[in-house]
Amino acid sequence: MPRYRAYGLDIESEIELPLPAFGGNTSSADIEDAGLDHRVTVVLGDVPRLATENERAPNAVEINRDRIAIAWRGVGRFLVVGGHRVVVDMQHGADARLARAVVMGQCLGVLLHQRGLLVLHASAVSVNGRAVVFVGHKGFGKSTMAAALQARGHLLVSDDVLAVDVGSEVPTVRVGSSTMRLWPEAVEASLGRDPDELPRLSEHIEKRLYSAKAASSDDRIPLAAIFVLAEGDATRVAKLSGQQSFVELVRYTYVPSLIQESEAMRDHFKQCVALAARTDILRLERPDDLSQVGDVAAFVERIVTDDQS
Image 1 (cartoon, rainbow, N blue to C red):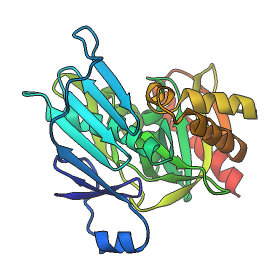
Image 2: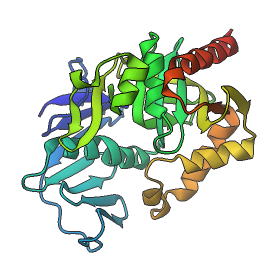
Image 3: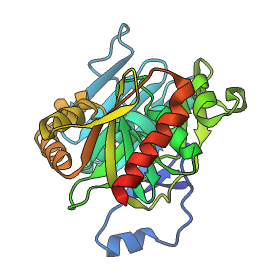
Image 4: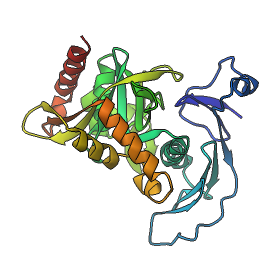
């Protein structure tokens, strides 16, 4: 099977993924000898119908110990097992691009949680070798801000699914996918590109896929700051308290409903407490005006650079 690298994992997949191909010299035997298991497999197979499926809901979830099954109407069923295996049961006639999006989104998000990482619904870039992270409600511009900073010469760390390792004194972020999903107006505002030059996420979804310049897939990048996006009449930042930071981290956990229904919630809360104590988490207000996204990106760049100096 083709091999890819993302989130520090060696991923073998029977379906094409928008990830860097793995051409390194590390063999599976080398990984085993080092006492590490960074291997993940994505295979095509049968996933039984979920008891929770019904025709009115677009998706369904079923949790059984270390297994989480997800069904998407019109796309297929997906099974994530023990942090090392994803089974894809694609519905006949489904758009393969949507199946890939589910694998790269919910499936990898669940798998990374299963491997003990804190996973946030966020986008991040590397500024002077440190990760700058954006979280916020859907449609608040996480990917747009990351794209604007990437256009200013900074490397993308990950878009949409962000894996944070809080086990060390300085939390680190793992480099994920280099493919961004942007609305057409965000492509124009943040990248200065014609959105019609970029492929769509799917036939019926207007979002465009953009291959960004990204950090090395094996890098673990120290976390500089997390910006919580909000609307305001001007561009400004305010540092959040420890309690406020904890609340925001819980709020922007990736696939929180799956974590709440599993036995991982207590460990997840501990990770959020640890990250809130070790990282600057700031509320970033800015006008709801895409024409100003470049100025906001420059503002963030100055804050992070001044903090590092």
